[in-house]
Length: 106
Image (cartoon, rainbow, N blue to C red):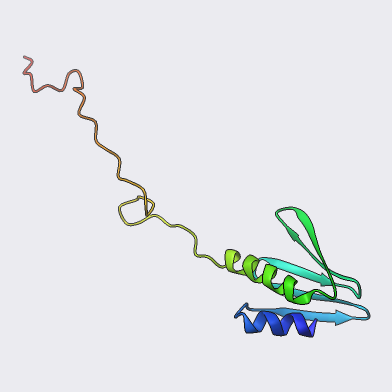
């Protein structure tokens, strides 16, 4: 657990919380909660369990860094104009609308 936390800290992943009891530990970071046993590290990603051998902590740290970065990306928000950035503004219709042609009735 300490090695994983150190590698995540070196990659500026945070906040990271951890706890241990007996032969199990848990590390929580943005985007994932990692369970650690003497044999493996595992976490859920997109509804599927990902496992990594306990001896391969550096590769797990690289993968978890990517997850944390994705989890901390700012959400796309609408601008004051009500448009989402990067999208073109709607083109107004130039089609004639019946009954609005400037005709006088009366």
